[in-house]
Image (cartoon, rainbow, N blue to C red):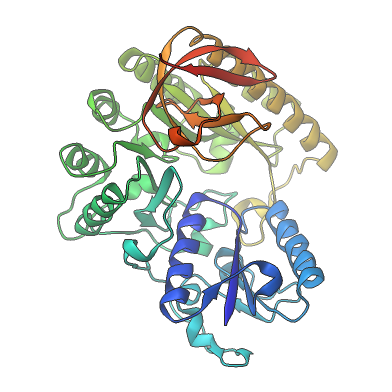
Length: 422
């Protein structure tokens, strides 16, 4: 039986899809193009209305290309909104998606009872390897229940992968030639190993002296966890990259309070100052939501002005999406879709300006990148610096997946160009 997996959403979902594929291959199923698959699995995000549109769009595409395949929606969407099938034959939640073979017979798909949430385990050496960066999920779940967020309902309470498993996995990845690993999770700041009581800071300190790939990148992290100790660990590390992705969500204290975020804009400014004081050239990115209920024009301007003034690298911008079951779903003061789109455009323009200004600081400097194999514009290959700048250099196959020193030449057509050191 052939299968095809389509993944939407976060890096944790990407890891989950690796695990699902490994489980299916171990059970004797064969990965294939969508057009030849007997089952098509959508590991589906449900964070926004846009995520649901992506599911519907992909299902329509699947039906056109392969009308005989059975379609499974699995993961976050199936966990929270199992009634929204969009024509799929089977809906699976978070635990079930890791045991899809329990729902299959030789003829296709059949339905069984739902299971409880669990944190999956999987031997790393059966997962597909080949990318320059590898995403390793060390944690799942969240219990913060921010007023806009459906993730706690989709992922359950925080659970962490044992330190022993992480060390074994990183050792395998090092042996297989992976140069960079991204430690990812749903709420990575809540990481805690039950056996040793080690938290994320303890883990990062341990990884510094363990057998791991050369680079370790930490994914999006709760700003309340970024204290002096955490910044010092990153600053003093030879492995941990100097990039920080902070889920800010708003620069308005009034909106942060309505969102259920437990910090204010002054605290975030303090973090930014501390990072830049300790780590020269650090790349700081932020998530921001536009159009939260009650965010009138004045409160939006507070966010815009906060971000405009902040010495940060980039923005990830999202329009607010009401999700049934969250506290914000019934809040008054909704913002029109047209206004949300206008605000998103303004913030994305600001993001482009921030990126260009950040890149200009490094023109003429030498940076270390790990080139990837994909070809861009027919002539370039791309690699990321430690502070997460994408640098484009002339394509040479033999440079793929090597730690490479390049000199930053300049910016052309929004691309940061580099040349290999002679």
